[in-house]
Structures are given as C-alpha cells and as structure tokens.
Length: 214
Image 1 (cartoon, rainbow, N blue to C red):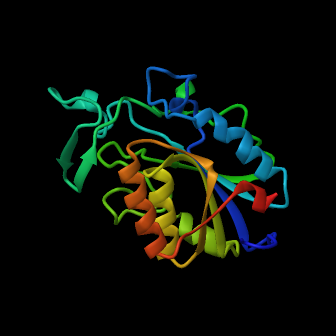
Image 2 (cartoon, rainbow, N blue to C red):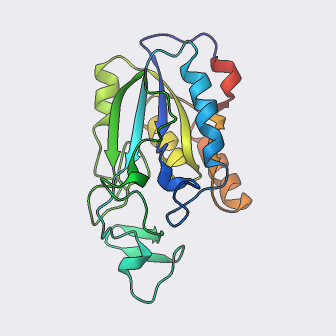
C-alpha cells in the first residue's frame, strides 16, 4: 500500500476523463465502464490528495490516427505510419467539440494543470509524457519535477493504452509510479491487458486501489 500522501511530492494524474470515451458520445469511442470511474476518481480527489493533473485528447479533425483518414481501412485496423505501428481509431476527442471536454462530473477543485495531447495531426499521443513517436515530449515530466512531485498516482481512461503508456513513461522518467486499478477503465482483450500489466510490473510500476488514497 502507498501509505500517507505527501501534499507536495504526491500527485494524482487523471488520464482523459472525457465524454468522447463514454456513452454520452456513442458515435465516438465509448469504453466499457468509463462512466463508472468518474465517481471513483472524485472520491480520491475528496481525500488527502492535494493536487491533480488532467489530460485531454485534443485531436485535429483529420488526425492521422482516425480510420476515416485511411480509405479502405476500418476502426481498430493497424497500419504503419512514419513513426511505427498505429491502431486506427474512430474519430474521437476532436478539439473544441463537446466530446473532447473534461467530463462535467469530474471534481476539478484540485486540478492545477490540464495537459492537451495528440494535437499534432500526424502523431498520435497515448502517453501524457511522450507522443507515439517516442521522442516528442509533452513537457509534463519537467513540470512535475519543477513543482517537486516524486510520486504519481494514475487513474482514468483507458488501459492498456493511454493509462498504461503514461505509467510506463512515468516510471522510466524516474517517478515512483502507481496505477489506481479500480479508477481506470479498460478497452480490448484480456491478453492485451495481461501483457501490458506484466510490462508495467517489470518497469517498476505498482498497483493500488482508490480506498488506499482516501
């Protein structure tokens, strides 16, 4: 268990709590159980955690990761782009649309930074720290170090994609990294999640539950 939270050194990182991933936007990219994580995250935010960062998918309308931009391809096909393998997604998280907004039910009283990612048209961005070319940084790591954060608790949408890539990067960048398992939604088959979980554990990422932070 993580133990008592430190007001400066600990931070909750909420990944993509957006309607685009929920039944509110059924024609975008609804993730099973995504709505259910919002109240769990709010319970964490109502506890001793002092600060939170929220990420937003903020895509160009013709983003390269959208299946609609690849004639003859369908959502969830995999293609190779300039930076490597890429899953093609339904259009989602399009900047300045209702689906891309932060979910109206999320408690933002402790949110000190909103980080928009995936806004470069030609590169997708799962991780809050690095885009999918694995070389273009978002600046989040530098900001966290500047404000004294050492331990990051990660919740949100979705495993094994944006949440897990964020966790793996956080650990590789030297942060003590925890995934709040019951505060995350997930998408895809069990074997993909198991493979990602094993990779995270190898990277030193640890897992906890929301009750341990409240």
